[in-house]
Length: 198
Figure 1 (cartoon, rainbow, N blue to C red):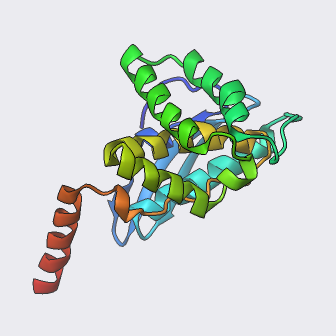
Figure 2 (cartoon, rainbow, N blue to C red):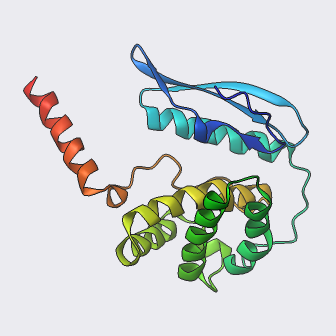
Figure 3 (cartoon, rainbow, N blue to C red):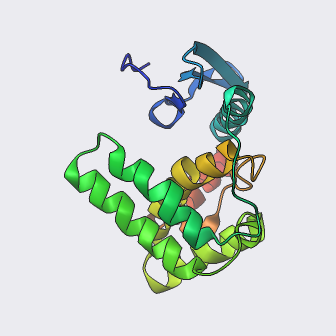
């Protein structure tokens, strides 16, 4: 587990790997809440993806419970304004390498373009988010869509949750086949076939 000092409102889930222990997977992670308290947590599930999903659910709960924020935003406001005023400044202020920051801002620009003018409410549902990612995958590329999902999950939805506009990320932990590369699909198919033949 990383020993990097965490700022309030941040966690280590994205940098931690679930470890298989017997018949389940275990993910050990840390979070520093908005009041500065450090929480050391462990999430378990039958699959690595489910363990990570449960960890993110716990993060959402901890951050909501310690956020002393009276938001002026409503779900009727546009996601475009929310991105410009709440999300972009967060990314720009992060201590990231120039390359990482440029990549994050680039994929967020794609998300902004394909959701421009839509309400926060209409963009915060699973069908809407999946549709947007599909369009990006088809028109820009699968890798860009994967990166968009990651940035939207870690920055956009985190801010939406903190402003109490949504309860959680609706596709957190959901496997989306259209985001898999052809190589990944072949490997998955071969793995399944090997399991059937063994």
